[in-house]
Every structure is written in structure tokens, then in C-alpha cells.
Image 1 (cartoon, helix red, strand yellow):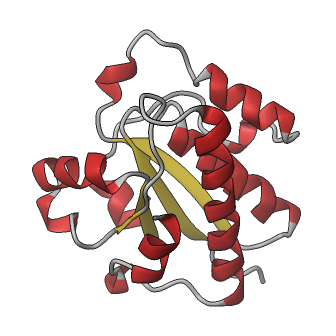
Image 2 (image 1 turned 60 degrees about the vertical axis):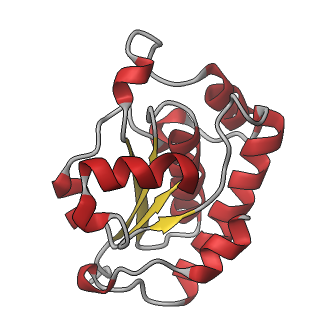
Length: 167
């Protein structure tokens, strides 16, 4: 009998660039290692990318360079719903300064129950800078999750180590 799948949720603004990259990297490596871990991703402001297409060309190129297939991420940007937060065992917003205010506005009960990293969007850091940093953090998270049981859905807390590692 296979162990239950634990879910990691990556959040960004549009669910078009950073979170989709994190999701694909996490799922690619979890699948290769046959781990009972899967990521999914959502956006807090997907209206910002309406009409832009299914995924950022920067994300597509960075995944292709790493030989990570697109099926490891969702087909298109999706807006965060309460059910997504409830499904995830661990939730990580990719830029605290950008996403904490949105969480406070949209899901105030969850603002302090998720982790925040500091991965800049394309307006503040080039993909050549941001995506390798994000990849390093995702692989570290995967290693951590593989080596220890994820907290139960009721035990979500902000993790200082993840915040410190991202700064």
C-alpha cells in the first residue's frame, strides 16, 4: 500500500511564472524519486495575466533547459480558493512583501498559517537570477519533505527556517 500523498501549494500573484516553475520542479523531482509528495500552484491575482497565455515563456524556457516536462505543472493559471488551502499540507507564498497583503485581504485567517519566501517577480529580478534561486529553495524543500513527515493540515505554521533561507 502506497503512503498518502502530501500536497505542497506554491502561491504567487498570477500563477503564470514563479509558482508554476516551483510546482513543475518539485513534481519532476518527487516523481523521479517516487516520493509521495506532489505540488500544485495557484495565484492570488490571476486577473493580472488574463490574455497572456497558459504559462510564462520564461518558465517554459527554464523548464525546457532543465528537461522538465510541462505536464508537471497545471495547464493554465488558477486562482486560489479556500479549498486549495485546506488541501495543502504546506503552503508557500513566493514573495512575502507582495503576497502577505493579498493573503491578509483575501484569506485573513490563513495569513499567518503559511510560509513566505522572497523570490522577486520579473519586475525586480531577471529570470536568470530568480529561477535558479527558486529552484534551489524548492529542491531544499523537497529534500526536507522527503526526510520528514509533513505537518498535518491542522499544524501549519510559518517556518522561520524557510523564511531565513529565502532572504
